Image 1 (cartoon, one colour):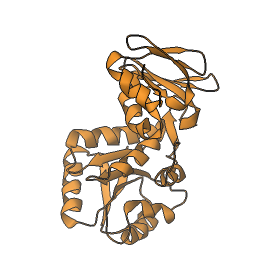
Image 2 (cartoon, one colour):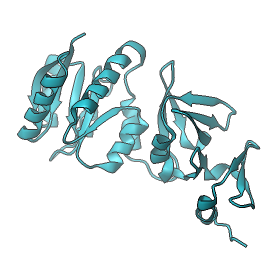
Image 3 (cartoon, rainbow, N blue to C red):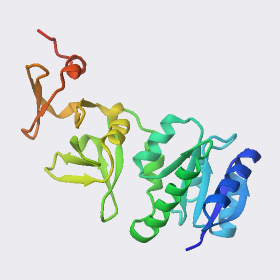
Length: 250
């Protein structure tokens, strides 16, 4: 299946370099246009109706995210291109979308395109409103898009009790008692949720500190979560956990 694509980057070198990498590694992608701004991209998308947009984030006047003020319900997929915007990357991850770091690696490009092709046959388009709202996140909560076999499930971080590693999967336990198995490693959720009151108490478990019912002393000790389940705390994580829980170690 041929994927019709538009490249958006304010730097000519960036546009041409990405075009070259795509043509060498992704023969199933047809480049329709190269755009140097959000304005040019808007006109090009309206004209060509592409399947996919490679979108640079950091551009003068309007960054890449402002494109979605023009397209409230886009019919195209997006692969973001960025050099360094860590916070923007988190927002992209919350929304289960794809991004590539500059300079673009050929293998990562092929993997991102493969995921786009898979989504075309199995999942709905990403939630761009969710992406934009996550860019403005404040406080101790976030909403993340969790990929499941049926599609994407939107979950508030405040509804998560803990995330547990299960080989290459992560089990997410919710306050409702529901458990969701996701084909992503625990480290990804640690990166996503560490700013929102989550703490990795040992290698295989990330907990929501807001849902800790009590801490029990021991070598490392353990915490009892609000659902009554106990979670062991690693010895080297003990002091940091106690500090985060605002407890005094005796």
